[in-house]
Image (cartoon, rainbow, N blue to C red):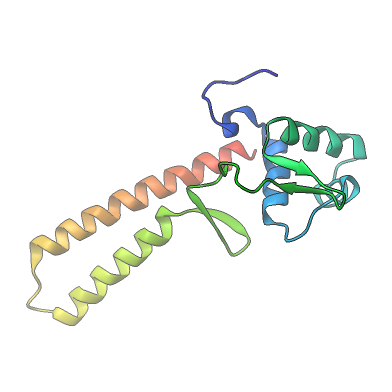
Length: 145
């Protein structure tokens, strides 16, 4: 198997295998080869089987009598992401939204006697969370192409 750099499974997975992994991670039941083929739109079951075997080889997925499932106890590929509205979003984005909303609420409720330094530091922290979260989101989108 050829590595593309880095040590984690994300660097080893190509876009299609990663999409298959995401499909299995989001599924609430084991999926068979034909189900993966149908959902992913592959022309043949051998394509689905190839990607599933690759995920098994990497230790991310296991084959059961009911189908393929994401392994429990394995370091999760998307540890820094949370499933939100059917897609994976970096955990930093909900944190950034909460912090931004909290500080804005404080400013609105405390106006005109707002403490400028804590507000400025809070918005600066939120800005860092937004920038990093969006960077992680763009990185995942590039990987999935």
